[in-house]
Figure 1 (tube, rainbow, N blue to C red):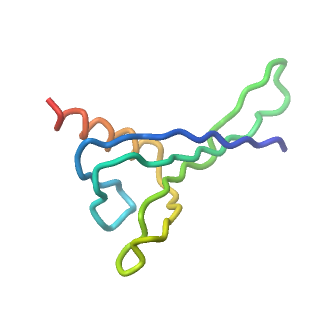
Figure 2: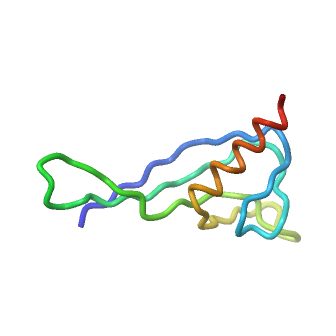
Length: 88
């Protein structure tokens, strides 16, 4: 099965929380990786999301390390929406 990964940078203007991560994350730019797989049997290429991960600073005392944490794309969108509302 063919899979692909997309990377994007998401910026938060305020400290935020995402369901599934037990701590508050600081404002800043975060790399988000989305894995998708090809839906076979169609007459055109179509992919479905199978995983979304965010790269975050590691919890204390490992501040110089980075963790890749699996999250829901819906929870990420909710956090982005909350950040946009807080900016108003």
